[in-house]
Image (cartoon, rainbow, N blue to C red; front, side, top):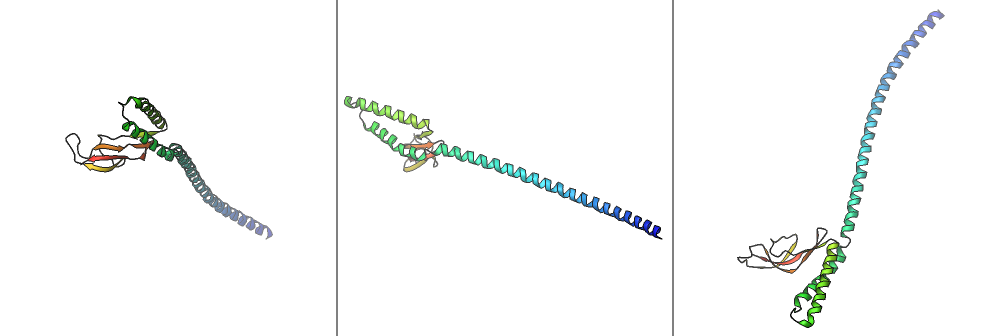
Length: 179
């Protein structure tokens, strides 16, 4: 009997081992599927993180570039008053007066050097005489009836030139517009 029990016990052990192996193989398949799923999530997270880092780098580069471009904005805005005063002095001075000739030449040279320096640093004048009125670049301070030479909604006179800094409006041009 003990041999029979041993044989039965061995058969039960073999069946249990087979069931265990079947369960284990199923569990391994489930675990392998879960590992594959987690690896896919990890790869997705990694790609998103890399994209976010690239976006942050591009944003920082753009902000640094803008800071360089527009760092002179307040300083350039203050210098525009000097340019305006030089232009006013040149228009008021009588070029026929021989005693003022050298003064006028000095004003013209100073104005030219000043304007060239502003242009070198990205400050451009906006002189819209004869152009259509553009509310983004011009500030209408008055209107006048349109004539045959000036169609409606056209800039007739410029009281004060406008300026842009690297394409961004620094000061609008103050203009008279034809109605």
